[in-house]
Length: 195
Image 1: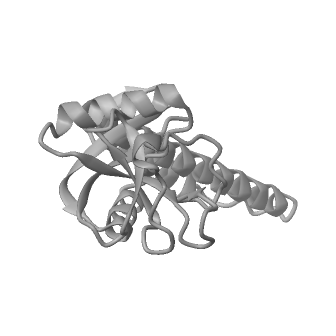
Image 2: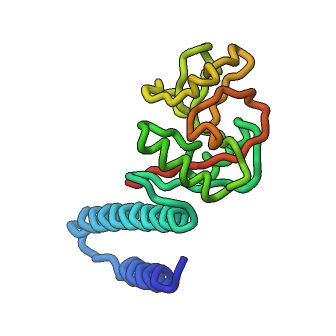
């Protein structure tokens, strides 16, 4: 947290401490008002914490966008260490995103170009598309049906049957998709939605 955030929290603490040390009224009629004041104060604190957390999320997202690339309402961030599909997916989730899911040809092209720039020696990257649950029914990592596909028809993709259930974006095939064995080690790109 930066210096302005620390100053804000100190001011908030001081105000809350000052309000909490005021002497209660001796009249019985004032007691319900005090409860209302306490409830109002609790509500204000809750709202402030929500704002602080929202600001933290936005700051983290801006950091991701600075390290990666912004495209439409998403930020992409390529990961250096190759992993199995499931490990890659878990890593993206742990960082507040998901494996990248291209929703149309433009997103697919931007993802391909970004992957090519960040790791020129690599040929394929995991994306968040799979048919693990039901063969031939592709869903994204959130279990939503996929409506955009960019299969490499020259290689008759998808070809793997039940053995190859995870999808990779191929740089050598100009961003076309290949189904692959999920245990293969590949680099991957995480995506983060921008609110």
